[in-house]
Every structure is written in C-alpha cells, then in structure tokens.
Length: 467
Image 1 (tube, helix red, strand yellow):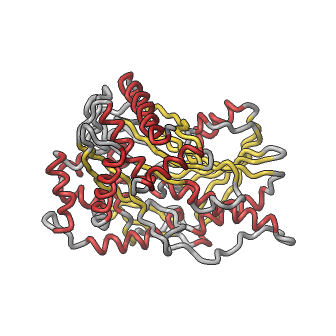
Image 2 (cartoon, rainbow, N blue to C red; image 1 turned 135 degrees about the vertical axis):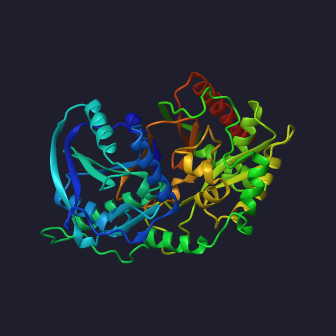
Image 3 (cartoon, one colour; image 1 turned 30 degrees about the horizontal axis):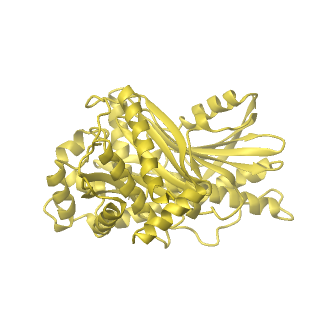
C-alpha cells in the first residue's frame, strides 16, 4: 500500500458513484452511554473548539484501490455495507458526555447505504477534483464519519473511501481495503447470489470501543504522581516538555498553521532496502531501528543535536482479537538516544534499540492521559501540537492485512490535513522499495530543510551498501 496524496495518484476517468451511509433509526440516534478512546476524546474536543472560533482544522484518512474487470455495482454496494456492519466504530454516533466524549452504536441492521450516480468524470483532473471534494466531506462533528464511492470504467473500477481521523488510523485503511475487496470477491464468485448478500465474517474482529473502555478502566485511578508516569516525567524534565521540538529551523511562527505541502518519493529500491535490512541484522539490529538511527544521523549531519528526541506511534492492536479491527489504535510515545559526533550507524542503531526497549516497557500509559495529567493547562488550551515536533513513523506495508492477497490492486492511502506547523514523514515499505510520504508547512525554510533532510537520509541509508 503506497501512501500518497490523491493529487499525485493517477486515477483514470470514468463514471462517478457514491454510497451514503444512512441510519434506519431516529434522526437524533440513541443517547450516548459508552465511553470512547483517549485519542477520540481529544480529537473531538479540538474540533468543537475550532468550530466555536470559526477556525476549523480538518483532516481525513482516505484510501483507494482497483478492481479489474466489469464491476458488479450491487455486489460492491453489499461489500461496502459489509465494512460498516463489521466495525462498530463506523456505526457509532458520537456526542459530548460529562466533559468527555461518549457514543452509542447502531446495530448492523440499523444502517443502510443510499446509492447516488454522479455522472461522468471525463478527465483525470475532474477525477482528482471529485475525490478531493468527496474526501473532505467527512467532519469530526457530523455523522456519518465515512464516505464511500467508486469511479467505474469498462475494464476496471477505482473504489475509494474516506474517514475522519476520529474513527481510523493509517493501519485501518489496509484493514478496510481488505474487508471490502474480500467481500466483493466472495460475492462475485458465488454461483447464485441474487441479490448479493455480504458473507458473514468467520471471526468478527474485536471492537475498538470495547478496547477503549478496557484501556480507560485500567488507567482510571492514575494521578499525576503515579509511578507509571515516571518515564514520561523524566523525558519532560530532560526535554523541557512533552513535545520534542524538530531540531532544525522551519521558518514557522509559534501558534500559526500553514498550508500543507505533500509529496511521496522512493528513497530505496526493493533490492536496496533488502540489503539495508541485511546490514542492520549484521550490526545486531532491526531494520526499523536502523531507519530511525539513520534519521537521527541525518539530523545530526544537518546541525541537529547529539541526542535524538522524538515521538513515535505505537500500534496497540496486538496479534489477537484486535489485529484486524478498525479504529484509532495508536499510542504516541517519546524516544531518546545519543547520536555522538563520531558515532556511526552501528553505535546509533544499538542506542536506538535500547531506547525502544525502554519505551515498550512503558507503552501501557497513553499519551493523551499523560498529557492531561502532566500538563493540564497545556492540554486544555492546545488545539494541535504547539510547534514543529520531531516525529518518526515506519510501517512495512507488505505485512498489512490482505497484502499477500490479490483481491485488491494498487492500494493507496491518502492522508490530508488542512494546516501544518512542521514536517511529518511517514516511511513505508512496499514490494517496490522504501518510500516516504511527507507533509510539511508551506514555508521556504521548511521546503529547503525537507529536501536537505531526505537527501542526507538517503545518503546515510546507502552508505552501508557501498561496494
């Protein structure tokens, strides 16, 4: 799965179709009685405040993939409905509840899809504009929080969906693609299915909302002096706060958001990333930590500090009931390790791995909970990260749900935010190599730093491969 903006995706013209999720219950929905996740509560509060000051902050996590051959629209509609029926988080209605965020979930039988034909899209530019507008229709404060559609051609179809961040993380995109494509394949391969009926899942995935309730229960009694916060507390003392600053000047003013600039490029070929992974193993480390160490070395070469401090996302799904569940199963945790003036990849890789092991030991404390307890005034007042933050993310897309199957082709994830005050890099590996999807603030300095950093990072990665 390639992470790339929709503007840079090559999606051919065709006939536009939409499916709108509609409730079959009353317009107001049931009263909220269930608590939501930590990420969800903070995200919803930020959206509420932004709306109150008429300064909305918008974002989406969307995805698209290709189906080959003549599409069966009835089967596709059934597969899309199957996705929503399979994941509670998509059927939940979210409302403020006692200073927090609550929800109630519609049952699978209480939702339906309404089909709308959108007419022909005659050029690639029209397709891009259509998807830009459709993806941005999702709104944190409005239901539904998913929109779905397709661009149909005689020999192929682009299927797409867009979710507000409230109900999804990046890994959920692969899960959703796999659910839709697998259900569609099963429906269309049936000998007799008139009308098509989405197959029942052999094993229903665990509910993100149930996961969130369990997580909240485990942290309910936590206070600011709790020993479980020692890791965060020590990091804050050394760092000067919860948020590690991006160490290079990006020309951004405090408290200001800028238009986002997005791009995706390949850093290493498939053979090169394989060779780099071998080099990391020979040094006694893992490829992911080798990538983190290389980022730290590149920052140091460009004038960054001798200690790397950053945030990194952790997938909380595990390998059990939640492995293929949609939701926002991401914790964000701090990591720091030395990057000495003369240290090479082996030294920094070993330091990064030691630091990662320490972080894993404290992963049970959620970032939002730590933020609220250790910096309550900042937590209450900040609508987004206070300044450009140092952030590292890597995922091997070859290991995502459905990646080894062929029901969906050319899977793409599209991430968009309306404003940015720093640089975000999402490193991801596909069968074609190592890629980076970047969103940075639209300043000359941020553009120059981003280019210099990626070039230096690529050099660091290829040095172990020389000869």
